[in-house]
Image 1 (spheres, rainbow, N blue to C red):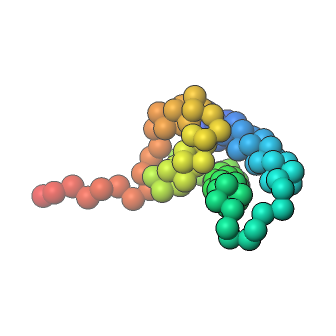
Image 2 (cartoon, helix red, strand yellow):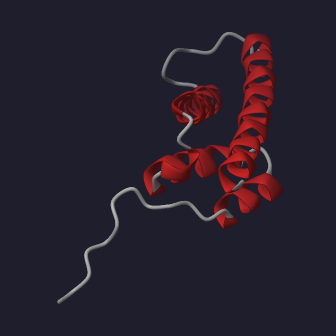
Image 3 (tube, rainbow, N blue to C red):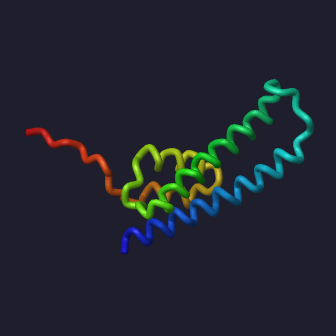
Length: 109
């Protein structure tokens, strides 16, 4: 069933993002005390963690609804943007997956 394959792929993506977030949290925890809002590298790590968290929440919401076939382009882009930093191969597999657009484009008459 196509939905099962998509759900399995999204679960693998979620696991990869979770692992990346755990590693990132360790890196942030070991980072020397930054000067708030002045340390560009530290702020970059925080932004990367925010991206991972948003993508993980999107995947969790999709899987909880059991509606992998209604993954929107916006949802997909959020996930791919975070995933490409973690696993290029998995990101390419996700991008290659065909999802049904919940709002089909109207046809001209």
